[in-house]
Image (cartoon, rainbow, N blue to C red):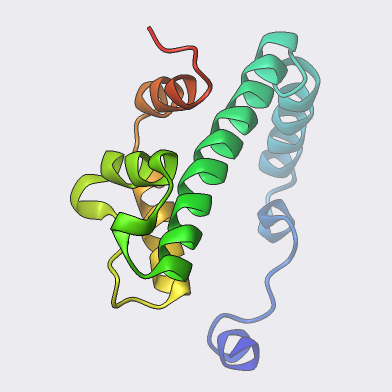
Amino acid sequence: MKRILTQLWGIQPKDLIDKFSNSQFKEGIEKAKKLGHEKIFNEKRKIELELGAYNIIETLLNNFILATYEFYIQKDEKKLSFKSKRALELMGEDKPLLDENLYTMYQRVIDYIVGMTDNHAKYIANQFNGMGY
């Protein structure tokens, strides 16, 4: 597959800036990137938000993936632990289906989480952590 893509698109440099032939544009973009790394990407509040986002995603994945795995193993919603059953109920019509393989079940979980707004993801993670409001 990689060979086919290389034939179609050519070898892509790591950084698209390398494709610029105009040195002024290239220099301007390099300066903007440097400024972004120095002033934006390493700003304390941004780092705090990123770390919080990792915790939210981890909480969502831990709960939904574990519930999905239990469902896959048990093959019956009635045999699930209370927590797993409730977690899957949160997914509504997006929850995994019994006749699916584990990969497809996990893909449903990922699709469900990706479809959440930031606020909804934070709300659900807080509910899982017992910090609901």
